[in-house]
Length: 210
Image 1 (cartoon, rainbow, N blue to C red):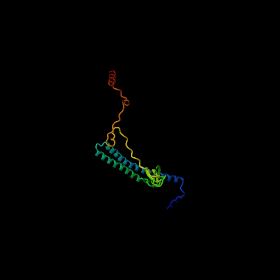
Image 2 (cartoon, rainbow, N blue to C red):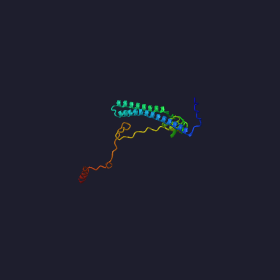
Image 3 (cartoon, rainbow, N blue to C red):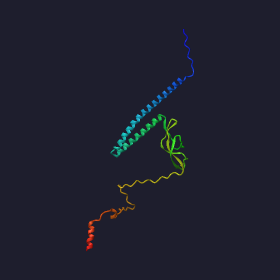
Image 4 (tube, rainbow, N blue to C red):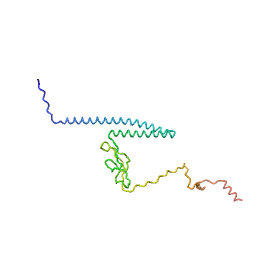
């Protein structure tokens, strides 16, 4: 009976072993990233189908021939847009992407970009009043900063007067107060640049000869 061969002594890993382990780790991360990308693209295909149907419903709205058809097509189009937005947000959440809740919080330069200010009598200076562009996070990192408007000390701005629509020459203006009908402004013959009638001139000459 022969004795088993002695085990090779275990020593510290060589540089070749370290390099092999790094290559294996990178290969695993690459395969994981490719699988997530394929999964994401597959979900976007379903969203593309929904948007294609939304475009079809928009065409139906433009081709509506009655008020009933217009209302029905508008409701269907609104439901399609809401469904597409909800599908996109659900897919974001599945990949750990979420919108940032910024309204009412202090402006954070790491996650927000101040694009405007507005006086406010009670909110502290630098508090976010509203957002113009929604910010998103990917896990714990900022994927896109939110564009926000923040408060500054001062009285609240007064609402401006409602803007009147521009007058349309094709639409007659309303009559003045009191029920009186507006009379058209008369223009002189010189303003209208009209020639005098020959008959009038001949008539004046004949009266002078007499």
